[in-house]
Structures are given as structure tokens and as C-alpha cells.
Length: 249
Image 1 (tube, one colour):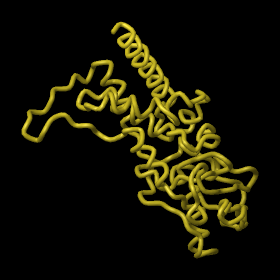
Image 2 (cartoon, rainbow, N blue to C red):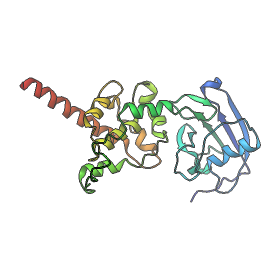
Image 3 (cartoon, one colour):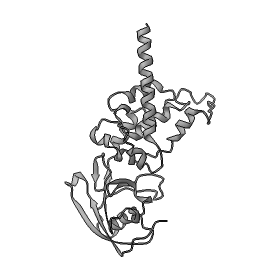
Image 4 (cartoon, rainbow, N blue to C red):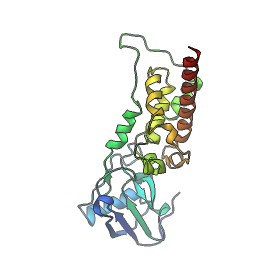
């Protein structure tokens, strides 16, 4: 159980993001029992600065829209108790890394979702509505791999945690590549060739340095790093099989 802070007020610094030229604003926020970071941000917006912009929806860790940098770490603010992230009685909250800032704590998610599409992270159906539903063996190794990443909710925490994205804006990122791995192992998906082409080129899976920040910080305990390693193996197999076939001809 989280412990409540042993003081009456919190010193909260809001990083307004690079679009505000690095401006920071400090607030004194009352400390309450079982207070989350999102509670703190909401109190500031409701009581101290009504111009503060941020996102949230469900408040229970289902939507991922409240993700922010808290003490330099990407987190779901709705499920992060303030007592776990304080330095004394202080904390700094900012917008997610690696994404353009719209205003204050709200970032533009378009680049994140554009890369999802660029990685062919969309279902490639082979059947029509008139065809019978294909039987799926839930215990097959490929199905297990597909299920392992299926609970990604696109919160972009892994994307914000990824230093490769920071250094290489063309890199597709952990979430998009994990989705590609999920579909590659899905017996219902018919896009294997398209997926491998998309994630083996510039910005693809081989840009990953296997540092593991994506897996460490995923709030849903998913493992994008292992998914990316799987993509590396499959693209290598595809390359050598294709090269051997051409040479044999």
C-alpha cells in the first residue's frame, strides 16, 4: 500500500514543454490521502491555473491518455501515487518525450500512430464476411506470441521511454513494432510479406539497441523488447531465404 506524504503541501513543478521555451511553473498543492499524480495535475488546473492543458479520460488505467513524464519517467498519472515519485515533497511533471507538444502536458500523438500504420500494424484480412471463421489454436506457440502483446493500449509510454526514438526520429518505435510482431504471429492475418518489408527497412526493428526501456516502463507489463528481437530473427530468416533462392536460380 502506498504511504501518504508526511507533510501538508507538495511543491509541484510543471514543465510546459519545449514549445514554451522550457518554461516551468511552480505550484503549492495540498497533500491528500491516496493522492495520484493525476489528482495533483487536476487540482492545479481547477484551483491554481485554469489555462493548464492536459489529457485524461478513464482515471483507472484503461485508456492510457493521461501519460506524462513524472520526475523524468513516463508514467500513467492516474495510477501513480504521488508518494512513490516525490523527492522530499517535490515533483516535476512534464509532457511525454519524443512527441511534439501541443500545449503544456498535452502532446500530439499523430507521429506515434503514423508509425503504427507505417509498421503495417493493421489487420490484413484474407477472408470475407461470407467465409467461415478460421479455427484458432490458442495453445500454438505463434498464438501465445500474438497474445503476449495484444493488451497494448497505445499510451505511448514505451515510445517516450525509448532513447533510440530520441536519437532517430525515423525509428518506428516499440509499440508499432510490437503490434507488427503480434500480427506476424496471428493466424488470422495475411500480411506477413508486407509486415516484414515495412519493419526491415529504414527506421525498422534493426535500429533497436535492446536497451529495454520500453519493457521496463510498460504499465501493462508487456515486453516490446522481446517482440522486436523476434522481428529481427524473422527478417534475418526472410533475407537469407530470399538470397538463397535467388542464388539457387
